[in-house]
Picture (cartoon, rainbow, N blue to C red):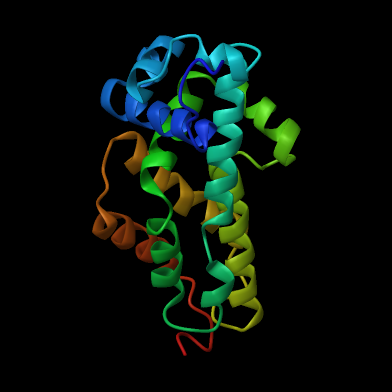
Length: 196
């Protein structure tokens, strides 16, 4: 006989509960009991579906990293608008609750980055993937002459994503502050063709 009611998309339900716990109480308070209590499920459910709590955390970090890496649509912005604004808007559009929770968790548990990279490849963990996408976007704009030839797309991407990381860790969802900082970073690197 069934012991309970099946929960559709149980993994996502537990991951959303982990987001809530980290955002409300901090990564230090994240535990199997806290997640299952937030999710409204039996305390042993995590161990039914994951080898242990570290396995749950690794799966959660992989899921959130994958979602974040897939989110920035920088390639759609190439050749349009202002380069700095495009970069800032792409960063601001990232799914903030998952991004914030993941950033806080990885700051406390940097060992999870290696487990994420085991699944998603080197540079696949959250901010690293966003940084790579931003650098590719800037390099494409540089190829169109919209970013100065002397500019370093990888360094600009690192700086822009570092601004986002700092704001996320500080709990700021202020898209205007992000836009101001990122556009200021990029402002001195406009290419001969500028904004089209």
